[in-house]
Length: 126
Image 1 (cartoon, helix red, strand yellow):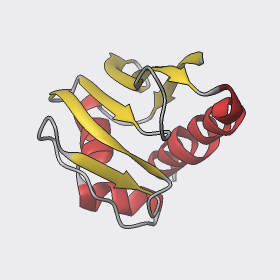
Image 2: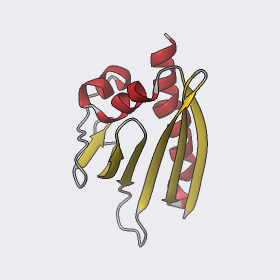
Image 3: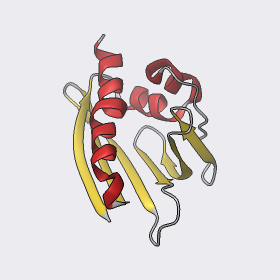
C-alpha cells in the first residue's frame, strides 16, 4: 500500500471548489459525466461512470472532504482527504490519499493530476 500527497492551485474561491467537488450537477459540468454525490456522511458516491466509487465519511463546508475509495478487498480502507485553503490565486487544495494498492498507484496519481484536478483547474481557467 502506498500514500500520495500533493497540493494543487485552483483559480476559484474555496466555496466554489467545494461545490464543484460535492454537488452532482456541478461535478457533471466539469467532468462531463453524470455523478452520484451527496454531502451526507455514510452516503455512497460514484464518479466517471463508476470508475471511482466509495463512501463519503466527513464534510466541512468550504473546507474539507473525507471519503473512502473502494479498491475491492483490502485490509485497510483507502482514505482520501481534501482540504481547501484560501490562496492568493483562488484555492490551495491539499490532497492526501492513503492506502492505495501498489498495482493501482501510478494510475491513481495520473488520475489525480490529469483527470481530476487537471480537469477542475482547466474548468476554472477557461
